[in-house]
Image 1: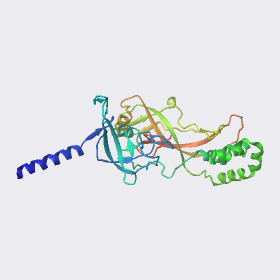
Image 2: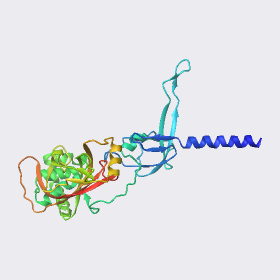
Image 3: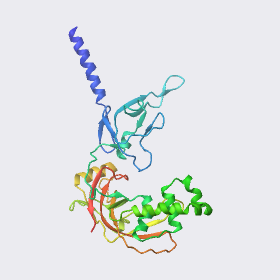
Image 4: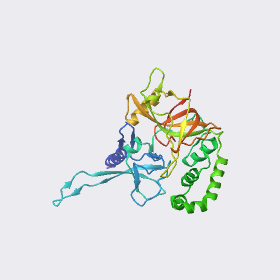
Length: 330
């Protein structure tokens, strides 16, 4: 009798172990198991919703960098009039987080890992300029004025107001000429304060999508040249009639140094292994050159000279983790 009990316990424990070790393999070869603790990343597109996960109950905020256990639920196939199954059972994966309702955060693991919304690799990395801050849309007008590329025109005042306030509050001020004249002094003072605060001595970065040639095994990295596209992004303020700061520069980053094993993992995740054209998302580091000349040509485009310092390359648009490599401008 005792032997039967041991056999029963062995089978029971063995079965549980098999269930616990059930694996899910993603399209890029990364393997994880039901019951693993997974880390939520950032949305694939900055400022947008997550593309590969969402709440089944309510519309709560998904907590970036929180950890949750992967769970699976099998929904049986529907049955026809005779009781026979129609189609196949449906498998749904969840991330279980203790602070939220049970089994409410649905996740598509393969796509979540491919898009970086589930983190499977270390995110700590060194950047070329850790002190750099992002040049945001609301900074464009103050930067242009501080550098000398623009003056306090009515156009600049309206565009800055649109970039910093809510559209509902500012629609009358920017579209109704009488209301604009009543608020002009207040809006001008806000813009002057922003210009005074803006620091031309800082290192800024702008995010950009950059194309390079395929991996160079001799030099250990990815070459770039101007035929592959503009090295810095085309910027634009918010609103229906935006102002465009056109960044001009003299230096480039002709090469991004990347170790071969890091390049391989990047290309596997992106499904671009061995291709002659690769795409990165970069933080391009710049210093804005002061003392520039204001030129009005009616195009709403203003040239702003910058000292292009270098870049850090990443796999995803947010440029927050999955660092690939760096390159100095020359």
